[in-house]
Image (cartoon, rainbow, N blue to C red; front, side):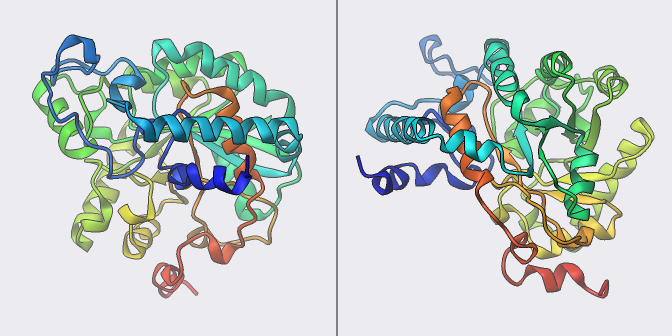
Length: 349
């Protein structure tokens, strides 16, 4: 089977837009609510007042030939990389790789544990702040991994427990107004209008305190989870500064930011400049990739690439995505899209 044909079959999975199993969780604005919020029980889709408890509820209906063909192509390509040793070769490349998840539901515990067990022998597990510092300084002399979780979902409490087993650290990017929220209407509005997903259960501030006590970090994910490419300069400042101030009151400091949805289509050079103007030390995307040794860069020149994944995915598919990204060799000029650097730099020089 021709590998170029296989690559073409899974092209939709690139840039964090697709998964290893033919379903889409959605790191971009293409994710939508189920068309019928009161579907019958056998669809396994929650109604509006039932929090999501599995990835399959988010993925929705994946029937049809397209997802089947994409899954088959991805499996064949992943197995090809595994048999030829390309996965193991890729894992040995010196780099900083940020693995990004949103949830670890109960049925994903063992698969997430299996992933960490598979990655640990070839990588140093480091904190997110250390990862950022290594990328900024260019001091990348070994394969290193760190983890991030977006949105502050309650299942992150489960992730913390599993990370502890492997002495791994993560940064949890949260929207502070939804943390500890108990009003069902506000939660529903946030999920439907901000996240564009069914209702989730979120962590509370006690959960946040406990993960901080274990050495994890908390970052900003805005106040309301908007598509930042649509915001005015005033709205950008409100979202970025407001989230930072609320988090500082709760956790003492906040240095890192990740924008909602994660794709460049949901961001802008003006939004990136506003991030650094508000004092954040780093800005993270949801675009696939990793960071290899380069010369030192300034913080506003760096856009963190993160490897989007779902714990439930097939391990061989996940390893293929990680290995493929490990072979990317971005230059600092390629961190941001063409033409963005001049706007982001402004008068910083």
